[in-house]
Structure formats: C-alpha cells, structure tokens
Image (cartoon, rainbow, N blue to C red; front, side):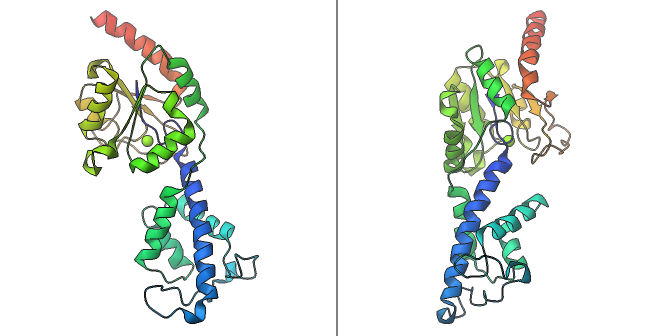
Length: 266
Ligand SMILES: [Mg+2]
C-alpha cells in the first residue's frame, strides 16, 4: 500500500494556513521596519517607500509597531485570496491589493517564510484509523512530491516516520522526477520489496497521482475529499484511478475484496 501525503493523509490547507501566518508575521515586521525607516528608504531596491499610504481598511487598527499593518489583518487578506483560488502569485497579488510596492527580493523572502515554517499538522481522522488498521497486515509506504525539506517537515509534524515502512521524497531525484515520473514509485517499491503488480497507490490528484502508477502496473485508488485542492477535479481521459472512494475507511474492505478477486482470477 503506497500512499500520497498532501490532501490524502492530512488537509493541505492547514499547511497553507500555517504558511500564511508565518508570512503575515514577517510581512508586518518588514512593513513596520520600512515604515519606521521611511524617510531613509530611498526609491530603488527596497521599494517600500510609500508604505505610509496604507489602504483604508488597515488604518486605525491596532498595528504592528505602528506600521498601519497588523499580522492578523495581513493573514486574513492572504487567506481570503487563497480561498478565492489565487495560486502561484498570491504574494504579488496581496501586495498589489494593499497598494504596497514590492520587488522580487521581498517576494522571495515571503516564499521562503511560507515554505520554511514549522507546520503543526493533524492527520485526517480516517487516515489515522487506516494507518492503525493496515499495519502490520500490509506494508505501508509514503510517496510525496514537493520541495523535499518542506515535505520532511510535514512528515515530522504528522509523526509519520514511525507509522510507515518507507518514505520516498520524489524531489530527492530532482524536480523532473516528481510524479508521475516512474522513478519515485520504483524506488519506494524497491525499498518495500514489493512487485508493482501487488501494490496499490492511493492519492487525491488525478493530474499526476494515477497515470504514472498505472503505467507501472500498480492499482490506483482516488480519495476524493470535499474542500481539498483537487476534490472537484475531473480527470482527463487516461488519468483516472482504477477505483474511487470518499473516505479511507472504505479501503480495508476494498483491499480484502480485491485480494479475493485476485485469488479467483489466479
Ligand atoms: Mg496529494
């Protein structure tokens, strides 16, 4: 049993919330510093010289060191952008909305703060139950995409090192070997001494979780959860999973039935 991590075992939006909290705190601090140094901040690289023109909604609030911006307001703005579907350029978007001039260095710093925060994550309840049930009847491995240092912090926060047999971070093989590359799947199977034909991959993202796994001969199961990044995504032809569930609680019965039908076929 090979498992995906984000939105399969825990809600990824919780990671995003933590990241935006860290980012908002950093931004409030940077803006405050810039505001305090306003007169000495010449136009150019710092690019924050007009911060005193804070938008109306953020004025007259309790502030972070008097900058006109406070952490919880910045967080709410980031979160609202995320909720309305802004992805990829969210920091540029929010700074533009707040009428804050910014440069690439500030954006890079915010991205670093987002990625490097120490997450405090909790497994989905059904994921917690599944790990309890599967072990030790089935070998359980974890295969996850994303920057390896970020994914390692998530795994640590969730305490998964002691709850699965093996973990593969596809990023360790380079960005080009994120799913659906076969390389990380094969590495996890090798670590677990399992043949692809005896393995199942469970994930949530039809854009990349199943196509590569199926080509290798694994069975695939999609967990489709509401309020997740890919919960409403309909797969392109060929990108479907073999089976779809809405709760990981359905997996043990499906595995048992699957084993029976495989024995029949044999
Ligand atoms: Mg996922």
